[in-house]
Length: 307
Image (tube, rainbow, N blue to C red):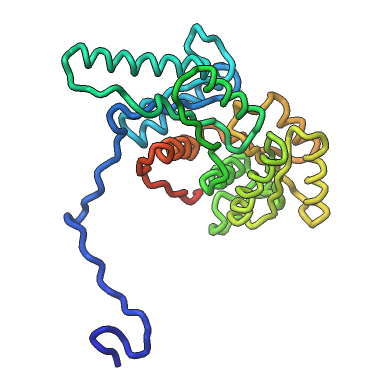
């Protein structure tokens, strides 16, 4: 028997949930605050056609998640005259903000001089790369602009999802473990390839554990830029019973030297998936770094199942 305050046995009572006002009402969509700092995506390399396309798609995803977002792209290499380098993009953003303030004051508006950062710089990196991050920090310092610099995008469950998708697209993993079909070329061991030294390998290993849980196969991280590291991990996986390996780049793309991935796949004697590229999770994670830096509640992010 139960009392009015609950069952005598101490078992929990299921209470009715309070109804939300409006049967199908959804929360109001989040928008960027007026005058909010710019999100500046710090992209390794130069603004080549491929890199520019990738970066533009990433910021397009971020803008779609947060309407009104001022999102820009700054490259670590390029031509200052085109306002393409990270330093010049930051300088230009500061000049534009100062000009807007002066125009508003000249028009008689009661405005206060802007405070806080001009921009939030988000490195387009899945994992830490000390050499590239030093260059990003130096570019921010050289710009003499008040800007916040966030951490890299990973590790994160959404990156494990992205890796799973890239492997399935290459025929190296089942798209959905729950479905009763086989992939003849599905790997039974994954080498998660990163660049940036030991710190990058350790960070990749955290996402690798999430990927291993999704695929139910062993996943081990190794450095692409360390001689013999890929081959050593391949041997370790094979000695533990894996026979059909796959190489999964824990890289977005611009930070990857051309040909390095092909060489690593030959070294490990296995097939390789594509780099993460402009997968939707990349844009969402870049936005999450931005909103966290500013203390803005981000749009809800959930990793969708891979179908």
